[in-house]
Length: 194
Image (cartoon, rainbow, N blue to C red; front, side, top):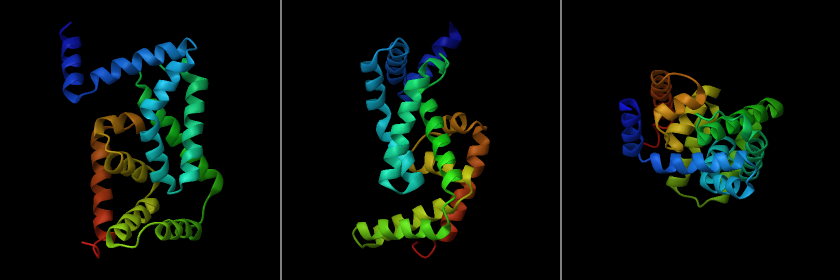
């Protein structure tokens, strides 16, 4: 009972308990075939998953495709989700796996990546802020795979390091080391903007 109480207090302090309980109920209803409940799960998680896919691809169409495939895979496999697992963490894992698969299949060249960033830059207003934003995305896209994933999840998505450690299946200290490395790379590559 004492351990449960500490767990509840921790979750409540972090602001997750209410969301966790709502998510849990919706997952259980979805396991039973309730499509409306799954629709609510999509509504609760769509923006976060879309942002991750977009930050990774820098392309709205690709991000939309990855996002839809993520939820389709989740719907088809919701009965395989462990009862103790977080649905949102599971979605991040599905999305990251799809993004990795996409990268393996397409094996985009640096030239294509540069062209996508160039096209994106011209769609936005020309300003120092937009230029910095685009340069940050270019630097992140060039990071090694695991470093890129952790950087996007923590620095752009705003997830805490503990949650990211569960998603990428490593320790919190490893996430912290990767973030330090990422920040150092970003600072070096973006020093002309600072």
